[in-house]
Length: 174
Image 1 (cartoon, one colour):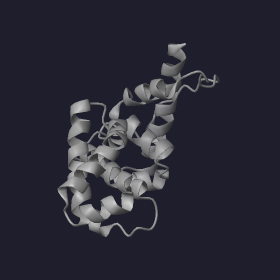
Image 2: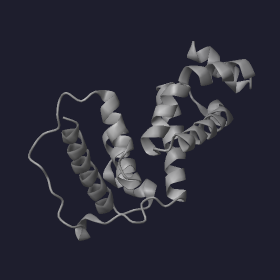
Image 3: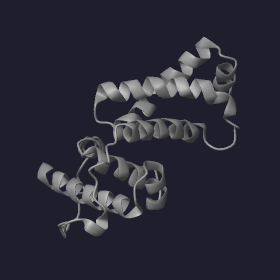
Image 4: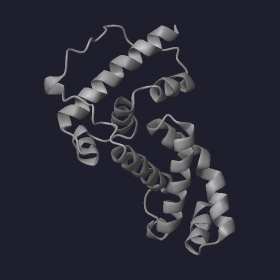
């Protein structure tokens, strides 16, 4: 099914583009919302992402996951937006960071995926960005540092703080 849609999109077939959009818009919107908590901005990123996707779909080689290939476009677009708006300019390098309280309690197992995603979207932008890239997208701290133009220690610091803040917010839910 995707193969035919992809071929149609390569040929600039508007119906194929619409079908592909309708099939994947909600999934890509969730990717956008992981990086920007403002729904209007996420919608803008979604639209820009599909424009970029349709412009570059001819470069998809067919090897590997199409959804994975698409997600990279949307993640990179979100990261470009965050870099442009300099969301990490107030980040602190872990070497100069104040002590982070680390509670011994583990996160509550009863939280739903929707509640967890809501907690993630409420994180400050720098924390949310690094948390998404490391914990969800699977980037290393070195890769995050390179992509965001920050130090590796800053990435580690932002991730550690995001985890602590998430744990605190999850514990407050129960």
